[in-house]
Length: 429
Image (cartoon, rainbow, N blue to C red; front, side, top):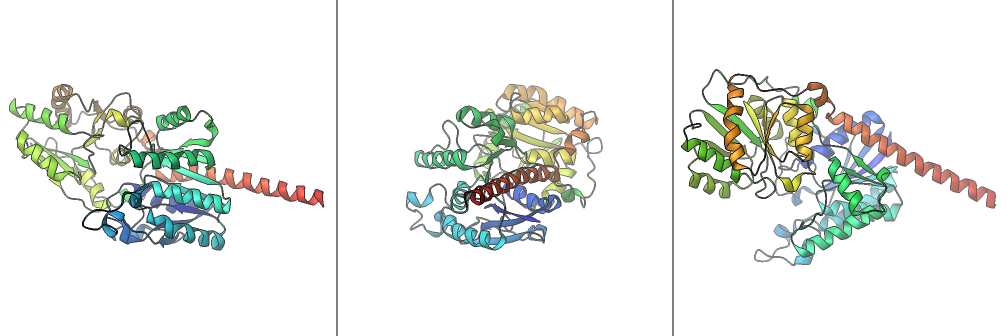
C-alpha cells in the first residue's frame, strides 16, 4: 500500500471530542482503498481527558507516532495564568515542536505520497504546512468547518493567528476539504483566486461496525407514560443555545402539557452542567431535564438506540456546519427533534433523509407550539423515519473511498511531474 501521513490531534486515547471519530475511522478504512495510514498525533499528556475504550479500535495497519505536546493552560501556567503568546494559535502549539521533527523522520522512513492534516486544532495545520514546505509532499488541509468567520475567534490575537494559518493553507494546500457544502462556498467567496477544483466536501458520518453489537432499541412510547428524549454531546451556549427550548418546556409545564411523569429530557455530557443546572432550577424544570456525565462512545450509541427520540441543537450562526452526531442519530433510526435553522446545511441533510421534526432553535413560541405534536407522534408511533438508502451514503467507508481517490489523484499528478522533470533532465544531457 501507499503511505499517507495523517496529522491529527484527536486520536485515542483522547476522550470527549467527536473529532476523534473522523481520523480514527478514516485510518481504519483507507487501507481498503490502497492507502496505509501513518498517524502523527499528540502525547496523551496533552489531552484534557483520556480513556482506553477506543484504543482497541486503532487498526493494526496504522502506524501511530505520538509526538511531544503540552497543554499551555495546564502545564505551562504559573498561578493559573500563562503568557498569551504561548497559546497561539491554540493551547497545544507546543505540539508543533515535537511533531515537525517527528513528522520529518516519519517521511524519511515511510516515504508517504501525500500529507493530510485536520482541524479543529489549528496547530495541526501549522504542522501540515511546515511538513509540506520541508518535504514538498502534496498537502490536503481538512478544514471540516471554517477556521474563521466574522467575529470568530473573538479574541483578536487568536483570530489573527487563525487567519494567517488559513491563508497559508489556501495558498499552499493542494486540496481543501470541508464537511458541509456551504462552508466550501464560503471559502470560495472569501478567496476569489481559490479554484473550485481544489475544494472538496467529505462529510462526517457513522461507522457501521459501531452499531453491530448494540442491543436493539425498543421505544417505550405507548407502553410507558414517560417519553425519553436524549441529547448526546456538548451544547455550546451560543452556537447551540438551549435557553429557548428550556423556556418552552417551562411554559408547557405551567400549562400542564408536559410534566416529569410524561417527559424526560436527558442531556448527556453537555459541557456546561453548572450553568445549565442553575438555569433549569430557576425555570422549575429540573425534574424534566436531567444533566448526565460523559460516558464511553459505544455506551452513548446504546443510549441513543434506547431513547424514544433524539435531540439535535444547531443555531443559525452554524448554518454551514453539520454536527457529527447527526449521522449517528440517522443510523440509530430514532425520530429526531432538530432545533435548527431551516435554511442551514443541518436542516438540508435532515430534509433529504427524513425522520426529523425541524423547529427554529431560537423561536421559543414555535417550540412551545410544535413540541406537543412531536411528542404525540412518538406516542402513537406515527413519526416519520429516515430513508435508509439516503443514510447509507453517510457511512464512513464511503468517505474513506472519496478521500483515497483524492490522494490517488494528487500522488499520480506528483509522479507525472517527477517523470516530466526526469525526461527534461535527460534531454538536457
